[in-house]
Image (cartoon, rainbow, N blue to C red):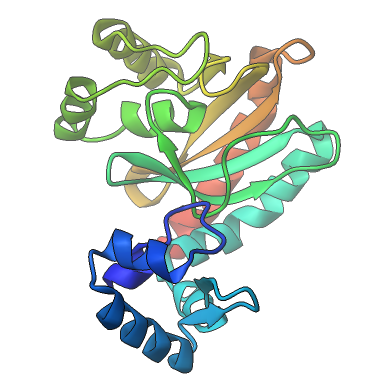
Length: 238
């Protein structure tokens, strides 16, 4: 498990030395265990001697029930939203006080973004993150606000009091808008996706160029898509 956990989000390949260092294993032990994992198909050895996560592990991970079902239900609405706006469409859930991206759609003219499928980003600096945090339980909110609010772009909100005010506004309006908080030149609008009983289970967002898009004008399209997805999700969960 330590060896597989050594492959952090964004790591395409690692050398045996890097794996052993991250897993805190002696080289001989690491070499033996990595070889066994490669024989089992969990990691794959590349021609240059480095390793990457194997296809078998991807197949197993794809069976994770909750994100798979959410993604399958959401994709048609995300595709419609992308077709209508030609902007980045993102779907995220709350995991370990981070926004975990379940799906993302983008086109050749969409603004470059730092999110990726199965990747995680901070709650305080992203539109989806603010939605997820706004509707999280009070313990999660207080834990995040008491933690390190790292600045990522010129307008990242790092003041807990100001962030608390923003979260209250997100709960009131059901919309979170950001301007250059996660990356320079971008803006986003995010809204909640609800399951059975009205519980917020995910956040849906559009990310666009800041100088060409108005998040408030994009909000109705995102709200419409999220409402339709919420109806389907609530029915499926029932």
